Amino acid sequence: MNEVAARHGTANARDVDAVVIGAGFAGLYALHKVRNDLGLDVQAFEQGSDVGGTWYWNRYPGARSDTEVTAYCYSFDRDLFDQWQWSQRYPRQPEILSYLDMFADRYDLRRSIAFDTTVESATFNEQTSRWELRTDKGERWTAQFLIEGVGLLSSVNLPRFPGQDEFAGQMYHTSRWPHHPVDFRGKRVGVIGTGSSGVQVITEIAPAAGHLTVFQRTPQYIVPARHGPLDPELLAKIDANYGEYWRSVLTSITAFGFDESAVPAATASEEEREAVFERQWNSGGGFQFMFATFSDIGTSREANNAATAFIRKKISQIVTDPETAAKLTPHDLYAKRPICCDDYYETFNRDNVSLVDVKASPIIEITARGIRTEDADYEQDAIIFATGFDAVTGNYLKIDHRGRSGLSLRDKWAQRPRTHLGLMTAGFPNMFMIFGPMGPFTNQPPAHEAQVNWIADAIRAVSERGLHVIEPGQDAEDKWIVTCDEIAYGTLFPETNSWINGANIPGKPITVMFYMAGMGAYMGQIQEAADGDYEDFLFDKQPVGA
Ligand code: NA7
Image 1 (spheres, rainbow, N blue to C red):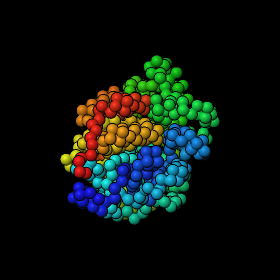
Image 2: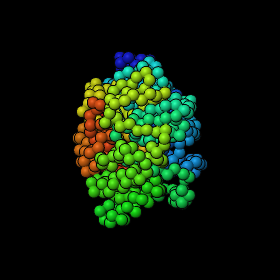
Image 3: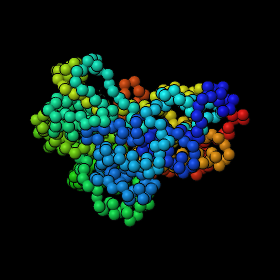
Image 4: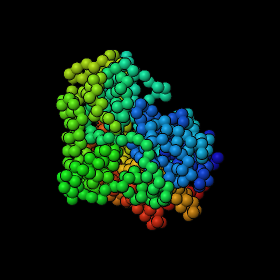
């Protein structure tokens, strides 16, 4: 223990080369990479009692990936890809969690993870150039490098309605679901929220519930998923040229592994457009509907209108009660995270399902017996909040980060989050984010791998130079923000409100939080940063005497 550490109250701290926060897809790969490949001494922390991240927490009925699973997995280990047999195209939560369990065992990761442990603060000590961390267990750790895979969609958004604590029935949030099965048979169940989680839980429990009441604030465009077995042709294609498949994922826009359209909607006649949308509706997939039909659904108002007109027509054809169909029909742009779910609109034809428009008649209170809107009381035995997350920045800001000169990340990001490449933020040396703000808006696992590989290369670059610290220059960060804004405002996404721009959380700054040019362009950007000898970054050595 050196004198500086003792001065800073880290006398009882345990020192490691790197700390990883989070044991989901991102954190597990980061731990493997920096511990097993780079050979660093690493400690990881995870709030949950086991590995899995999103797939540990989101255990609600119906929870499943809506990304084709061949691209919703790790790519770096070909044997693992070949050995693991997925049961279907969009696996359910337990299967994905088993995959991550197996991954942790395969690489012997658990021995380096402290579970049930929350990192409360991370302070950069400029005298030692090390991060000092405090956990909720009162432990102190120091590390040269801090790598955070804290989850893009993980910090729970639980609205507080007056009277909420008085409710006498059961109350759940989709992302904090109990580990035991919940029996809704014969019960009156209310679901608040109709995003990706809401639509999955609604369609799954509707057949069992006595009566299901859906409290919808904003209708969304929902296309079928078409769950089913994996496509043998796709598997054969991947098998024949594994490297090429993953290259195609990483050079695409969405990183989903499907063929994206290069055809603008305006070049097709109305009949051709209709046929393309119909084909995609029948083969399923939300991102596919947005990106495999035409190239400009997310950027051209006309193309977007064509897609929304098609989905609106489907809703009116499927939903038999015109009043319910009208409530389910969105009239805004199709420019949120695209959702897919089988039998969603069909569910509203069931006698035991009803829909309440809480924009027209807001929820004013939760009583002992149920949900009270401005117009009516709805008695419930159980209420499910499917109200989403304080996305992208939520979990970063829960940790009290202090960078150079005591700069607080909460202060730095008060108006909007700022990063360079979604990976680092100026003034917070050696702190890496996996899927930090202003990162790519894509399927996550392939992007996690690319980002972690970049982080590992950056750590290597620090040690090869015989130095101690890397951090982005302020100019580079400023330019990246301008780039992200320019690209985002060339799309339709800033014109709708959702977690993508922070508009789902009252009081949160509404701002661009992604690099919207796609995975291929993003890969180019991070590659250029490394190939350009990190000229946008500042390097430093460890202070003398540290
Ligand atoms: P989302 O997509 O943010 O959806 C949350 C839903 O909850 C959405 O329908 C909201 O309506 C609704 N909501 C939120 N707060 C309220 C209140 N106070 N009253 C009524 N309704 C409310 O979260 P998900 O968990 O479904 O999915 C998030 C992502 O996780 C998903 O996109 C995937 O990438 C995985 P709103 O639309 O805001 O009017």
